[in-house]
Length: 191
Image 1 (cartoon, rainbow, N blue to C red):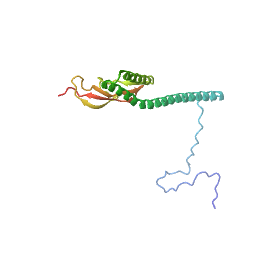
Image 2: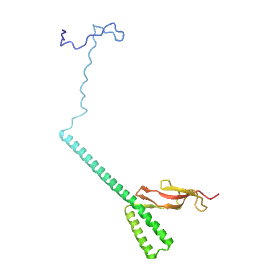
Image 3: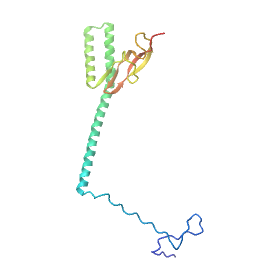
Image 4: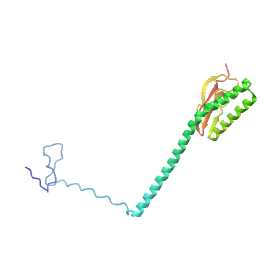
């Protein structure tokens, strides 16, 4: 049985014949590394009142950030719901506009056409109040961010790269594109 002495903190020295280890002179033992000194405070410690004041200010700032984030998310949800509803209403508006153009071609009674026009105008007005803007593309320079080209046609009157005709109106809700306008783009004068 081996007996450990309380004064022996070091392990047995390594054998002297190991070439990888530095030689140790038994007369001059290697001093132990001193434990790291505790870090001195950078300045005076804050009082408990200052600590509480700091915590209160941080809590107020966190709450203000939370309130702003909730307001932003609420607006985003409202905009998302509006966008979804508008996207479902746009085909109805398209049908009204198509019906109006066909009633004029087919010679429908004037009272019928006027009533149809009033309902269509009312629907447009409601959408405009909700922030929906129609994209008017005819004659404009083709913009792939707003227009969807369905075909190219030669035109002697419309310059190349401009919209000759619009087949379906496009719409924006604020700055966001809801639906691109479907257009026919001029390929320039025919050869």
